[in-house]
Length: 255
Image 1: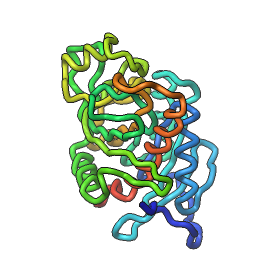
Image 2 (image 1 turned 60 degrees about the horizontal axis):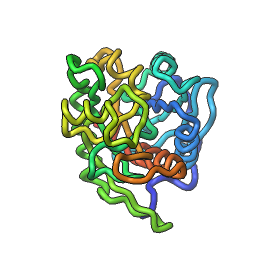
Image 3 (image 1 turned 120 degrees about the horizontal axis):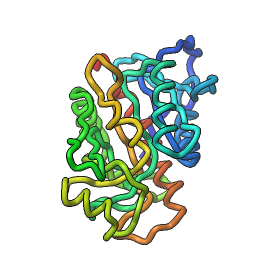
Image 4 (image 1 turned 90 degrees about the horizontal axis):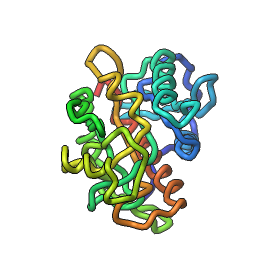
């Protein structure tokens, strides 16, 4: 499949502090993958806080992207990076891009899960966090417009999934792990589990008119059903970044 990213740039767009889409990463492997994706967009550059670029949407409007990484790989740092991103760029949507562990049998290594619902692991009384309703329509539009099975020129392929992601524990491939048992007991539709969003989504629920909508795009680097290999972290991060870049044109607030 040919990627939809431009290979040459038109005249540079005047830089502003506004970005329609923010991207938040936690791990260096996630940020490297996102930066590689941004480099294939227009007007890529490094600002004091974030890496920036833009793509046109289907109507030719500019959708600017600003991507940041938290200082440390923990929920508190992720929350702080998220706050700085929102204050500096006022994005309409923030994508939590990176890697996760698959907990559903249909989710394979290298696949990508898109989620606008997070289930907080270990806190049964807290309901799943739903993001802005309009975001769900944009995800559906995206999944209708692109192949569910993504083929790459090098023979690589992976599948796109949409469903809840569990938040609040380290990635694990142990089928008997407590977090996985809890998730499957509370919501058997949960596809993956990750910890990066723990400091962002549950503590700061998305409310229309009171902050950006939040979307998780997670490449599967580990599962309970397949042997883990460290190489899959790079692969999963790359797939998540590619899907994030493909999704950007669908996230313009005026769609």
